[in-house]
Image (cartoon, rainbow, N blue to C red):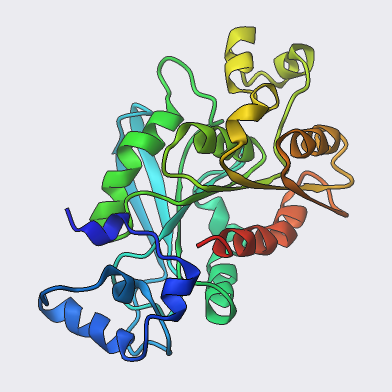
Length: 281
């Protein structure tokens, strides 16, 4: 396996990559070159002269979910072909992987990388409600299926970050505390429940035991080695208090701005969340 796929480039390394990197990347697309420095393959110091497809939509069989799922891969426009770091994106329960297109992520990512961030890609997959059951294991999909899909599409196989919305924010937090590769989590409007009484009403969980195992509020110490930030609208009456409670328990940076538990707020929060992710490359 190409070792570049598992390399996450630091901001300092990217900025010190030197001129002429874009040309080196184009040459690498035509023929293999010996002793290629992985850092130089990822660094960008001038506008590229060749681009890859910014958005790719694929359909794959997810062994973890026992079904076909949509895969949406979003690269910044204007970035030469080749492996770049990946942030996995987990949708809200009522959406799917394609919902990140509706929320404007391609344009947000392109603008972010153009002006302030080392290039990285977004990878989203249909995950249901991200809790799963005996015949549906979305976390297993992320751990076992996603790396192969990323390799097939010439991206780094180990995501360095996770961003999630609603139920997907809880999924991102759980993925972060269980995965050895995730270092950064951006949680937008996380559906956190302070008690089983509230969790049971959501119909997301099969049992109290499942809620206790999956509820981030019950496992604050497991986030000690993660960089975590939380966003929630101040009119999100159902989840603002628990979002603040979680942020306080894990020492996460909290962002509380006007908005509800809806797409209008998520469109406002996503640029900040992705900027936070990019700052930790």
